[in-house]
Structure formats: structure tokens, C-alpha cells
Image (cartoon, rainbow over all chains, first blue to last red; front, side):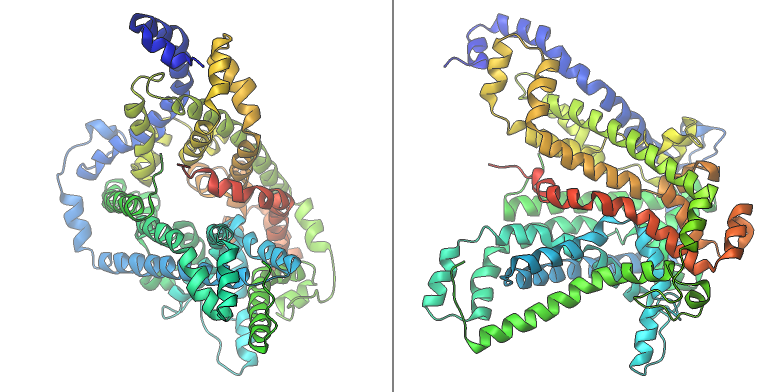
Length: 312
Length: 295
């Protein structure tokens, strides 16, 4: 069968003609989204210049006066800044690690269940929180984890003192991490469950004949069967090391827990949009974007190298 | 799996496993049951903190008040409009952008450069503040459209759709070309009908995303009357002092304990998600594997 492309390569002059007449539509299709990106993505990228300027809303991005690296120097001398970076990384890294381990464990356990209805019901339950906004989930937990809330009532039943999950700096990170895991562990297990369903059943049959028990089968067949998925997701999660969960923190924190809960994104939000320190906040944002960009490049590299993954 | 393992150890394993999974499963729904119970309890019981998973002093007044509150209904309406407008725009941009990008460089000259143009914003952004200033400069502040226009091109969805389009049999495309169909016709009459499950998935995710989004309302809409529901609810959560509330909200607070009313509001805002949840469940495995390149 002669395909169009091979036919058109026979005659080069023809091909150009054909291209123009037929394919201008392809470019036309791209125009609207390209304009949107230019305006809402690339123009803000240009706006980063104000990190090196003293931004004056009246003068705009272009005409505000240059100040060099002053904002960066200023930010790094702020006493709180190290604390904010530490908070961000600690919260994000623990979320990333537990956010992998718990879904993997959950997927492994669920995979062992043979009752279909039970399995489906559990899945229905655990995926749900992922689809609700942090306003709703945060609202529920702000109530449940308050000093008089349901969680503390249960703690009281065991005879322990109530814990200030939302106001105690020793506990607030725990609150952020545990509620985030609660919201997302079910969803996080989906890819693992998909990988698990691809494992050849004959492997299990052979293992049974060889006398392997349930746990042995889990560690010697099931777990190795999903290693590539684990490696891929681990590599991809690297990109989020500076994302401690902006929406969640913004909903759940309060000034009492700034020492343990303030992260880069919330700092940028407050400095920029509450204090109107546009240039300062942009400088911090640029710092975060640059590290984020490097991490994403690195994580895509790793994902490509170890799991043959590429996004396009 | 045809493995019959009836040993004692295996049965113990099953028992413990089901116990753990039941606890995990319940932990995900009980907070919502608690929320529902509080919303249906009398204000006295809610304030006294004696409600756990069953209403104490059952009443529907909380819900009656929610539906009588002009502000709540209005915000709900804004959210519905936003979901409709936003999802439509998203799908339009997704298909229009994904189709050309799914073509080979022989048809879309400069595809590599164009591809980079679309991928760079996924990896690097100007950050919150420059974005805010741009939107402000465009005079979109306090306009409904600020909720849907800046995010109209969801790049991850575009890439997913592009990969899906690339998987469509090339022979169909080429025979349509030979028969003289233009790109627009091929997209609408061949590609779209062939990608309905993917489109449904992306549409569902866009809908949920728009329903749940609250941040742009917070930063771009100074006029509370234009807030979508989630932004409105967020305000209810953080504003303990009545200075930030409107008169009819304060009225509500006086009539009912803050807690019961809050719970009713949160629950009503959850209902639309619960309604699309069965469809989401049907499609999200497709959704999550849609973006992967099959080679």
C-alpha cells in the first residue's frame, strides 16, 4: 500500500506544495493556546526581572530601576529564611518517602485480598479523599484535630493528655504530613495496583508448588514485579522536594505554628500578596523555581535512565 | 489466581490483612461520617462536642439555613458556571493543541521547537508574583473570567491527549487524507470519536479541578460576591472574627452554632464530587495511564 508520506517523498517539490496547502491548519490550531502561554506563562517568566529590580507598580516590569542582587542578599540574611527552607525540605521529603512507602504497602496488602467486593469497597473508600479540595479536607481536620476535636477525644479515652495538633510546634509538621498521607495514599496506590495486575500468575503457581508461603511470595514475586514502577515514581517525585504542599499549609496553618509550618510558598504568598513586597517575593520565587527546574530535569533523567520513561 | 492455600498461617494472614485494610478504609470515610453527623446534630450537641458518628438531637436546620443563605447559593452558582465554562475551554484548548502536536515533523515543520515551547512552562514558571502582576495588568482582577482563562491550557492534559492521538492507527488518518478530508474534519469526525474515553477522563478531571480550585478566587477576586464556593468556604474556615463577614452570614452564625453550620456547608460542597465519583472511578485508571508512552 502506498502511503501518502512515501508518495510525497517521491517528488520533493510536490511535498512542499502539499504541506503549505494542507498543513497551515495545524499551525492555526496552535495559535490560540500559544497566545495563552505567551501571556500567562512566558510573560510572567519575563516578569522575573523584578527580582533584580525595585519593582514599582506604576513603572511596570520594564521600567522599574535595577538593584542587582540586593533582594537575594537581603533574603538570605533574614533570620527566618533558613528555618523556612528547613521546614519546606523536611515536610516535603517526609511526605515523599511516606507517600511512596504507604501506598506500596497498601497495594501489596490489597493485592492479597481474594474477595472482589471487599477489595472494590476498600478502593472506593480510600480513593475518595484525593478528589476533595484542601478547603474541605482542611476544614474537616481543623475541626477533628482541634483541642476538643474527635481525635483528642479518642486520645482522652486512652487516658492521655490532649495534643495541640494545630497549635503546637512540636506536632504541626506531624499534622501536615499525616493529613496529606491520609488524603493521597489511596490514589498513590493506583499505579502500583496496575503494575501488580500485570504480574504473571504462573509465577505464583510455581512458587506454591515449591512450597513458598504467602509472605515469601509477596517478597519474592510481588515486590520484585513492581520494582520498576517504584523506581520510576521515586525518580519522578524528586522534582517535588521544594513543594511542601502550598494549599494544605495555607489552609491549615496559623501564626502560632509559623516556626514549624511556614514553607517557601506560604512565605512568598505572605510577602508578595499580603505585604506587597513584590520584588522580594519574586526573588524567593525565582530561587524556588530554579531549584525546582534542576530537580525536574534530574528526575526526568533518572526516570529515563532507570525506567525508560519519557514524557513526550 | 488458582492457588488454594488453606494452611493456618495463610488464614491468619488473611484475617490480619483484612483487619488492617478495613481500618484503613474506615479511616478514609469516618471523617466524612463525622462531618455529616455534626451537620445533622442540634447546635447544643455540636457545641458540646458530643457528636461522633451518629447525629445527636437530629435536625435539618443547618441545611435549611445553608440553602437560605444567599451568599452560599450564589457562590455555589459561581462554581457551577466556572466548572461549565472552564471545562469547555479546557477541552477546546486540549484537542486543538494536541492534534497538531501529535503529527510528525514531516507535517508539522519545526515540531521540535514548538514542542519545547509547550514543555518549558511545565518545568519552569515565573512564580506566583509575576503571574499575579500580569493578571492584574490585563485587568482581569474582579472578573469572573480570571477563574477560567489563565488556566485554560492544561499542559499535562495536552501531552496526555497528544500521546493518545499518536496511538491512533495511522492508516485511518492517511486514507482520510487521500479521500480529501482536511485536518479540521479529520479531528472532529475521526480523532474525537475515537478518543471519547480519554476525553471523558480529561473532562472529569478538569471538572473536579475547577470545582476544587479556590486560590485564584482568593487572590484575584476582591469582591466577595464573585467568589466561587471553595473560596467562600475557605473564608468561613479562617474567619473566626466577625469583621470579615457579611451581615447575612453573621445572622446565620447567631442562629446556629458555627460548627454545625460549617459542617453542613462543607458537606453540601462535597456532594457534587460524590455525584461524579462513580464516573471518576470508572475512568481514572485510564486517566493515569493515558500519559504513558507505549513503545
